[in-house]
Length: 126
Image 1 (cartoon, rainbow, N blue to C red):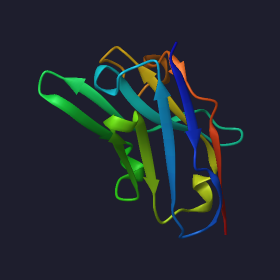
Image 2: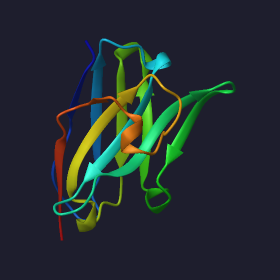
Image 3: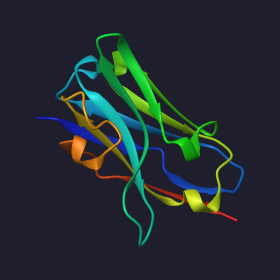
């Protein structure tokens, strides 16, 4: 079965960086769309970044508010998707989730993903 395991979260000072990892098993990265979402306390889960597939190949999607600071990447051989987070701010504090799905639609929507990891906590201190 599909399993997603996130790692790399922790406590960091504002302005610092973290790289999150999502190791996937039971799927092939080239056959699934892979996304990162986050959920801050008292807020809804929101889209961060994703890879999807279309007739033209691999596509990258980023939340407009995070462009320039957060970058998604992947290592197909390792079955791992990464989220590089730079210039972190206290408002980036959240649980970060990795998600996967075989469909090519609803890339930025929670409802577009069937499989979720357990999440990894990121805390940014001011």
